[in-house]
Length: 272
Image 1: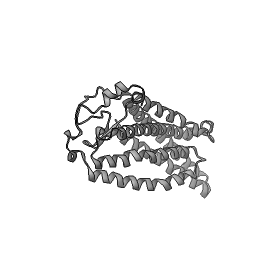
Image 2: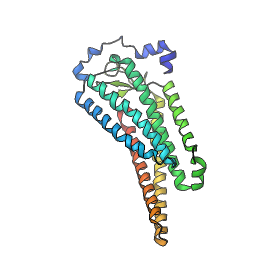
Image 3: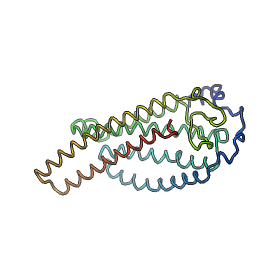
Image 4: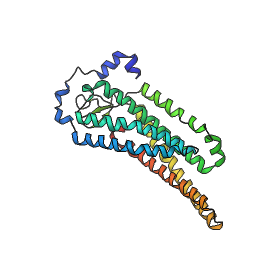
């Protein structure tokens, strides 16, 4: 965004469309009607399913991890407008950067912003689970009450700075994916002018950070489950207490699945 707003000469050099015609690649090679329609259908379905999920999560916001999950859910809902609705529309119409420059550029900016906020918040969530699983004292000290919401400020500010100083991804109907090179399929960049080192570094930190934190969390979860099982067998607890423990375990297992999702995103072509 810094280049777009304050460095017009550099922006024109990187993103001008005067060196080729969009029609150099025929529409039939850029258009993906069936796959784009699938994206649009899944976008509608997932958005409708997400609403009751967010409502259910909002009823448990006294728990720190549910605050993180609610924020992540809101970001996910917004993100699907780019990776579902916009991607589907661009695929159906056979769009490339030079056919919809403003739409694709700002769609890439928003997509990058949401990806960075969401993945960084996931690190905060993983850290929260490790802290609360290992120490009730530090869990209360760091996440009690409204303190949890403060943890979401750094990922948001980081995301805004990220898109301000780095290049966005741009959609290409030729390959049905998002690339840093807006002219991919027309002009080969060979990973030089449009290479986004910060984005690659971010993705690697997320990969290793989430893997390490959730591996630690899994070990803590197994250890604590074993301890609770031995205590329960020695001194039977109430039904309500057992239900709370079971419910918390289900949440923790869900969070392990969220980690798997981000690992899959890391290895997808459009996340690089």
